[in-house]
Image (tube, rainbow, N blue to C red):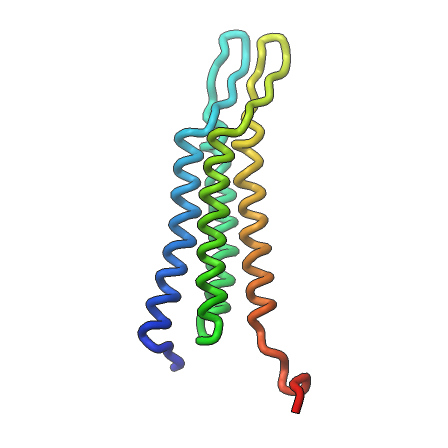
Length: 150
């Protein structure tokens, strides 16, 4: 069984915890504080972001954990997994701020208030998290033996 040195294993575990925690803290913040969908003649409020943000959180977490798992067993990838966790944390916390403070679109005569930023920002963050993970894994791979220079 391959094991990492204790300091590298601790670094990887901290990075995984940081990235995943940032995603889920953001999901909770968006669910609690994002603007609500307000519609109808009685201006009924529905916390629509709370219903859909967790789906994007799951997608982002799966992409993040998949890529971190692929980076784990190569000690030279320490800077890659550290930067990936930091970028993921900044991305998702920025997403929470954008979703909570972004403008609301008003339509109709009642008017209906649609929190477009609260719905779109987590979807974009999930896509960027998966893209970040895929790119990190691709750039961290070593070339095959046949492609190496003598």
